[in-house]
Image (cartoon, rainbow, N blue to C red; front, side):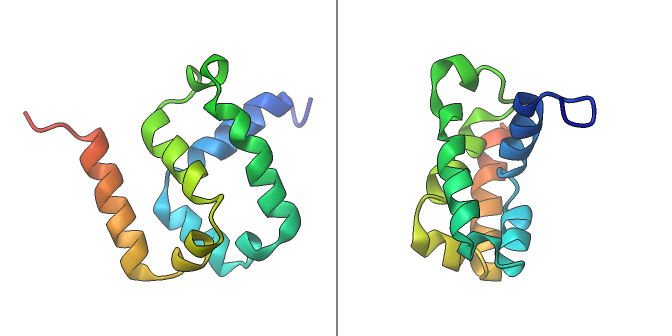
Length: 100
């Protein structure tokens, strides 16, 4: 237990936050996406792509896409760009908001 939460609960909360392009930009601006240990942690979080874990994700599409993109070194550099952040935000918004 970590502060009353299980490791899984903390990892679930974190992995879901990766669906926010502005948060990804923040991580990049703090140079975390250049840190080898952090990149390894992102690789470790790939277990969320397994069916038994996907069911816990509120927005599996955007969350898993972000996790996939973060495996790419080029994306980890590109997310510093406001244009990349805006494109990703638009794509995510379009995928979760359905017109009436």
